[in-house]
Amino acid sequence: MEIAITTARRYMTTICLRCLRSHAAIKSLNISRVGAQVTSFHTAPRLQHKLDDFFEMFSFNGDEVATGRPWRLDELRLKSNQDLHKLWYVLLKERNKLMTMEDMYAKKKMEFVNPERIYKVEESMENILEIVQERDTAYRLLEFGDEGQSDTYVSRNAVGIPYEKTKRDHYIPKEVNKKHQLLNPEYEAWMGKHLPKYEERLRRIRNRNIRTLKRKKEALMKQFDMTEEELEEIEELKYDESNDELKKYLKMTVQLNDHKK
Image (tube, rainbow, N blue to C red; front, side):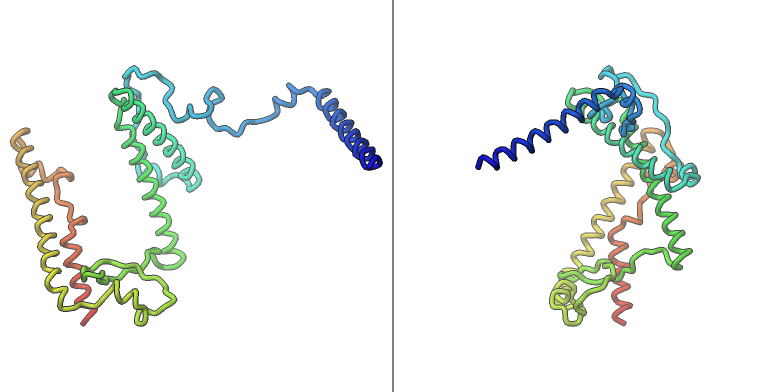
């Protein structure tokens, strides 16, 4: 027992001597000179720390902030992929800051200064995504001869309503997959009672949207003394056929009938 205690004391003494020598060596160095060569990994200004990047550096005085316009598609097409990647994160940081300030203004029961800044940043980010999609499509066409989009086909859901479905590989063939047959059945007689009602509902929604758009046009014509030809030039007052659910439903129904033939 005494031998073990003596060995442990010698071991601890050796460790303490090594620590003292290391401390003396570090103390003898010029710490200020060594610290000047260390660079910070923080990309923000040195005066900002912690969460300051998420707040604007001015008080809530209601003064307007000078802002520019969003990035255009023609300007973004001239930039490299690396520059687009950097610009995306700059805009993402700016959007987070603006959304934080918008919440702070709301808590103080004050009007947010220049709220259009958020829309400008979001428009710039949408333009970047569009440019990246263009370059990805061009690369796919050059290398593989297609746009890289997944093939889709029209199928029916459990109640018979047609919808678009993406093709993908399955371990079990659909002919013997009971779950697939239950969720994607063929046309049956009982579906004929519900599908016309669903189509009628889509027609009512479409007619209601058209009537609402017509009333809005009449109100603008009466308020600003504008003609119908002048209103037709405004894109926001045109009926968006790309989001017409009835048109999509009828198109998918025709595709199902053609596939059955």
